Length: 602
Image (cartoon, rainbow, N blue to C red; front, side):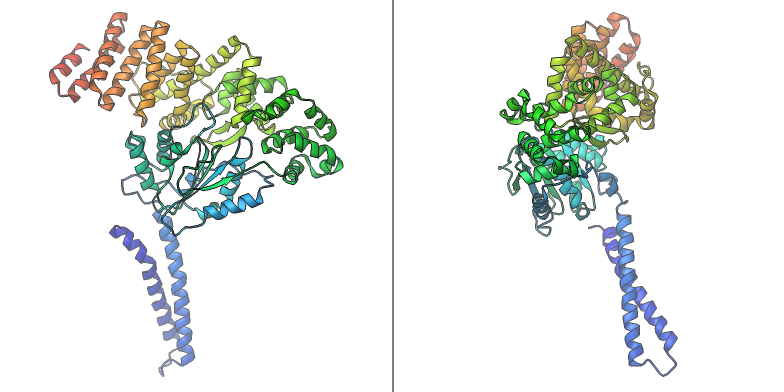
C-alpha cells in the first residue's frame, strides 16, 4: 500500500476526531457559566460530539471512496468508473417458474465472501432450457452486491466459431482501461494482467455459453471479492471448486404459468385443455414455449385449441423432438412462418453472419434496404422472439444476436430458400459495406496513404468520425471475420480488398496471430484473383506486422516482394511505402547500410 493510499484510509478518522473535538468545545463554551459542567451537561456534550464525529467519518469516507474511482492504477492506466462495466443484457419482465433455482444461485454467488477462493458457479443444461435467461435474472438480482460492475461475454461454445479465451481477455482488458498496445500477446500474460486488474474489486462475471473447462480457466479472476456465473451445455465437472447447478425443463405448472404471462391469463383459463396440450407438445422447453406464446400473443383472435391442433400435425416438430439439440426446429418454423416474406427473408439472410452479434446496418446491407427499414425489421424479429437484443456497443449502436439454435435454423432456411446466386449477392453487399467502413477508418487514422474516403450512410460516417480508433476496436472482430467469410465463400476480390482496408500501421493489434491469419487469407485471395496491386499492398501490410513482432526475416521477404511488384506494375507510391518500411526494418536490425540503400531507392 502506497503512502497516498494509507493517507486516504486515515482521512475519515481525522475528520471524525476534529469534528468531535469542535462540537464538544462548542457545547462546553456555550453552557459553562464559570462553575464547571454539571453531570448531565457533560454527558450531553460527550454524546453530541460522538454523534457528530460519526457522521463526519461516514461522509468523508464516502467522498474519499468516490475520489478513489478516479485515481490512476499503479501501471499508469486509468481504471474506468464502475458504471461503464455494467455490461449485463437486460432482464426480462415476465421471468417466471425458476424461483427456487434463482434463490439457490444467488445464495451460492454471494457466499464465502471472506474466503480466499473466488466463488464460481456453473449452470448447465441442454440448449433452449433457459440457462442464459435464468443467469441474467440472478445477475441483476445480486447486482448491488458487486458495486464495481459486471462483465459479460457470450463465449459461443455451441457455435462453430468458439471465442478464444485470449481474445476475450483482450476485450476485457480494454474495457478495464488498458490500452491495446499494452496488452501482452500470450494467453498466460494476458490472464496475469487481467487478474491483477480485478484484484480486490467487487466485480461479477457472467461467462455465457461456454464450451469447456479449458476455455473458462484463463477467464477466472483470482480475487475472492469477485464471483463468476457460467452457463454451458456441458456440466464442466473438471472445473475445480465450482458449484455445478443443473437446469432441467420446466414442470407442467411452471410451463403453464409462463404461457399465462405471455398469452394472457384469461385466454389460458378459457381453454385449459388446449393450453396443457401446447405445453406438452413444446416439451416444456422454455424457448419453445416463448416462441409458441409469442405467436399466440400476436394473434389475439386465435383459439388456443386451433393452435394446439396445428402443433399436433406439424411433421417437422415431431422429428425435431427426437434429435438432440435441434429439438425445437418446428417451433422455430411456426414463428418463422408467422412473419411476412420480407421479415422471413431478413431472418434467413442474417444466417450468413459469423460474428456473435450484429447491428441494423448489417441487415441493411444484406437485404439491400435502408437503415431505418432494417431497424424496423429487427425490432419485429425481436417481437417474434427470433432474435434478441444484445445491448449497445462502445459507440452506442444497438446490437442484436441469435439464440444458438435459432442461428442454426436461420442457416437452414438460407440454404433451402435462397439460391446460391442470391446468397452471394447478399454477402457481397455486406462485404462492400465492411470495406467502405474499414476504409473510412483507415483514411482518418492513416492520412497521406493511398486510401480514399468511401461512401457510407451519414449516420455511420458520423460514428466513425467521433472516434475512429474506438470505432475500429469495437468492430475489429466483425471485419476480421468478414475476411474469413469472404475467403470461405471464394469471394476473392472482396477478401483482399477488405484485408487491404484494415488500418495496420496506425493501430497495432493485441492479437497478432489473428491478424497474421487474416492477412494470409487476403494474400491468397489477391493471388487467386490475379490482383498484383492487392498482393503488393497486403505484402506491405504483412511486412509491417512481422516487423512489429520482431520477425525481421519474414518482414524483409514481404516488403521486398511488395516493392518489386509495385515497380513491375508502375505504382511508385506503393513502392515508396514498401521501401520506407523496409528501410526502417533494416535499421531495427542494425543493418544501417541496407536501410539507407532502401530509403534512397524511394
